Amino acid sequence: MVEIFLDEAPPMSFKIASLPTVGIRNKQDALQKLFYHVLVRGIDGENETGRAALPRKLQIWKDAEEEGSDSLLVADLDDKLKQAASSRFDNKLHIDFVSCVDSKVNLFLQLADLLSASANRILNQAGVKRNHKTEFAEFVLEKVGVDKSFSPNDKIGDMVAHISL
Image (spheres, rainbow, N blue to C red):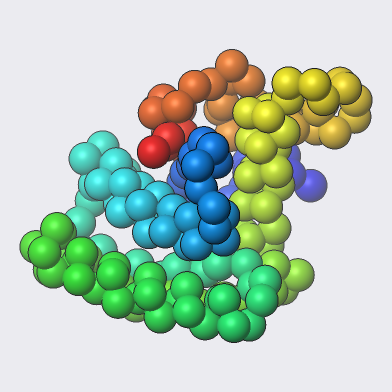
């Protein structure tokens, strides 16, 4: 299914973000802040390469998790991204909406879940026994053009970039 979807899907782009957790007390807060940085750096990268040059309208879909924290994340992202659209992107970026939806009803979010789980498995494979999950992770990353030895801040093909803060 993954292979068929990637071969037939419209052009898309994935960003893999990693952040050392040493010294971070509130991992949920850090993850929420990371969303903004991944989006802004992703927009920069897509604009610089011409893959998705500005001006552009952007819709942001995030996998729904917990109603309260999702509501805060959506409000914060919407506000910060609209500020960045004005100040950083010279009003050439229009934020259409930021929304949380259940990945069960969104094939793109399901694919993003597979990609993030695969990247997580490869990035954190120290001490993990190689098994079918490792093989699947390698398969998914290979299909989107990621070498399993990827390192932070790599531009990995047209579809994926790994950003490390």
